[in-house]
Every structure is written in structure tokens, then in C-alpha cells.
Image (cartoon, rainbow, N blue to C red; front, top):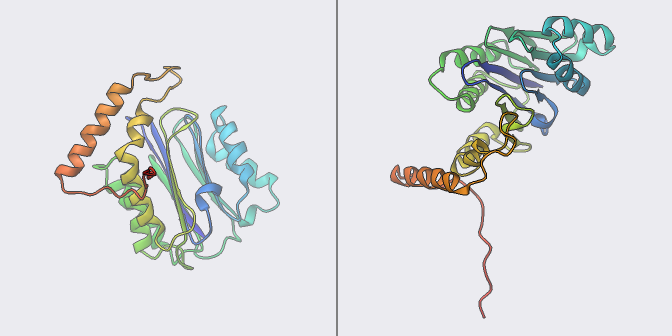
Length: 253
């Protein structure tokens, strides 16, 4: 009932997961990312494949061996689907024999894609190939372009409802974590949220504390300047803000 992609960028040290499904809040159930690793657990989700998987991968377990271990331990292995990225940059995937057709996965050197309850294998192929082809894009936009290609190839055979996008930059906390839990066109809504994030949020995220800089940037000046430049560039391009935020109206005497 879901398809997802895990990707890594060795130059930016970013790790990302994007997911879409005709299932409520798939962005809450599927992705698990750490400093160096990632897990997408789906189909009949077992969240322990995510939480335990992330912890064990960060400890150095190889993805292929860990998937075999989980499958051996889990009596529900045939209805589980999972793909992983380990700390050495290797991907591995498991699609249980009982996952609803069409179900399958594809694993590469820089990304992996897995899906179940899809219209056909073309969904996984389109998602995988589009990500590989769009190296011109930043990771967030690249992941969404790949997911859109998968949707256009057929996507979840039941329809659309939810999507999620998570990116880490070598930290335990997310650089970007967006979710659309219940929407008729969740990938388009993710596109909108990503644009809104670029207006202010991502400039703040760039300045947040990290493992190498416990205090982060405490001077608001550079952050505000970056936000102002982004706003000026958006207005110069004739693009209105896509934010739905409203300002508090002050009561007049």
C-alpha cells in the first residue's frame, strides 16, 4: 500500500526518505533515519524493524545481514517490506512473499526503492530511474521528482492519501521533516510545504546546533538577512508566498 525511496548523497552527507501511500499518515509510520543510516518499513508495518534497525545499523550491522536476522525473528516476515541503508553506505531490501501485488524493490549504490500494492513494477522503475537521472536537483526536490514519476507511472493502485519527506544531514535530528497525512494530492501538497519551508524554516535549520557546534548560530542577523534575500528573490520572480499562515489581527479601540 506504499512506495518509498531511500537515498544518500556522499558529497552533502544528506540521507533522505520520501514515501507516498493510500494510507493515513504514512510519513509517521515508514521512515527512520539516523546520523549515517536509514530504514523504510512498510506493507504490514513492523515499527521495530525501524527503531531496532536504525539502532543496530548505527552500531555497524550490515543492512543485508540485519534484514535476514529480522526476517528470521519475525513471524510476520511474509507481510513485511523493508529497505535499509547501513553505515558503510550499502543498501538492502526485503519484500515478503505475502505482500499484496504488485510488490517488489530495486537496490542501487546511491538509492533504493520499494513498494507494495502498486499498479505494477513500472512504479518502482520510474521512481528509481528518475532519481538517478535528476542529479541536477537538491535532494529534497530530487526525491519529490522521483516520487512524482512513480505516481505518474501508476503509484498505489488504491489511490492517494498521504506522503512524507525526511532529510538528515549527519545528525540525529532532521534537517527537514515534512508530512501530509490526509490529502487528495499529497505529493503536490509536499511540493507546497517544501516551498514554504524555503521561505524561512530552512534558513533557521541551517543555523541550528549540531554535533560539531553545540551552540549553533545564536546571532539572528545572518539568519534574518538570508530570509530577506530569499523573499526579495521570490518577489522579483513574481512568485507569491504559498504559505497559508495568517497573522493575528490586533483589536482596535
